[in-house]
Image (cartoon, one colour):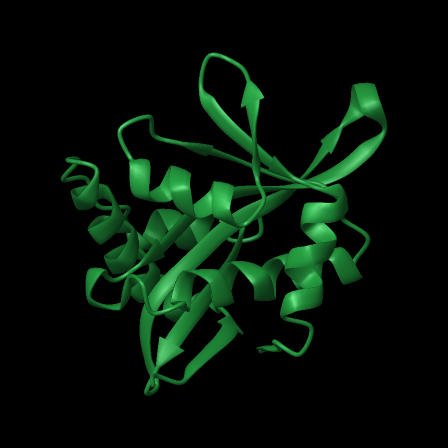
Length: 163
């Protein structure tokens, strides 16, 4: 069984994040690669987390705090979640997501949202299995809150994110 570690990404991880983001883009048929210098310049506009197996980065989650002014509600927007193909089905994505969600809940966030490409049924199934509910918009959007959020965080209370 693979042992995973979730940690905050740092500026020194920008090249790794760019490589992983490039792999994600390729998965979606897009050959673009974010420039590490651009990621560095925008550091602070987003949060990034890495999941490692045997000390090597195998995936990442990037997101940001947002605010729904019309509802007076702080939320977290999950921008990207990616795990290397060889580790899909290993639980790595769930561990990474649950660790970040748990941290954000402890910071007072009670709603999480994301968008999924319509042609990515595996991601759609993954998020729905975790309790994200489909939102009625033009894009496929999901939100995690209420009992489903409590169930996800209760299931993985001891997952720590190291710096």
